[in-house]
Image (cartoon, rainbow, N blue to C red):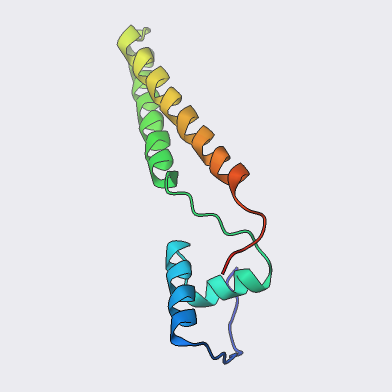
Length: 113
């Protein structure tokens, strides 16, 4: 559900304050408006650099599982190499998820500006 933004708020910042906010918003991959709104709602902003890699790994596993299922349905067997490939990718995802959990656990509860 998209919110219809009809109201405008005007704020004044020094050049350095604006640059700092702009930089933090870009770092959080948010627009300035989204960033300021999140700050005003005291939301925790966490940037996870490993997320795109995690998504790629999950997609690769899905592709391999589909390929294995097709081979299993056709030949009624699966090679050890295919199983090892999926196990390796699952291990990679487990490591990435562990890193993600560490980032979230170690982030500060307060928002720095």
